[in-house]
Length: 224
Image (tube, rainbow, N blue to C red; front, side, top):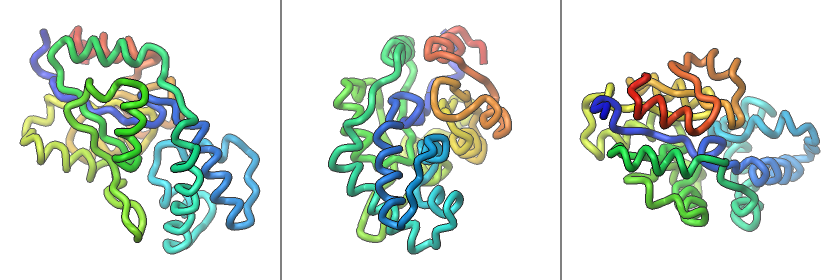
């Protein structure tokens, strides 16, 4: 067994679970509250993965205050209905089972609110594969700890991980790759989610995986 890569950090949205349908509808709902009727799905897809407040600011020019308020509107829909509008990607559970059986430590590092990530993981029966599920936390002022580097670092600190060569990040968006690199770890860009090959390679993904079995094969067979 390869004893080097032992800690595998997974993004959640677009990597383990296709949460896109609910996120797109919640984004549409939030934008409507600001008089913006966005019916171009490609524009709404930009909200799957990156921190929501940043996405509202970047793509629609919202102020910091309006970005926070838009996230609250987003959550009105998402907490009621949107979180259920999702499905686990094919072959993901086989990937998780293979990696877990090989002795690896599996971790979720997501910008999604932690309580929702746990809730959805439990709904699909995959929560037991993970030693840690870490995401954003939410209070009356909005979402905090949404930056991928901040999330990863909080986990490595808590687990006393100092050998970053023992870690790999697996994600579908540019912020997964850049967050991993800023944390000192390499990253696998996956092509079944919401980020394109161009986006992932542009962000500097160290490896690319077309399917979940590709990820487990790379790690278990020491192809990294």
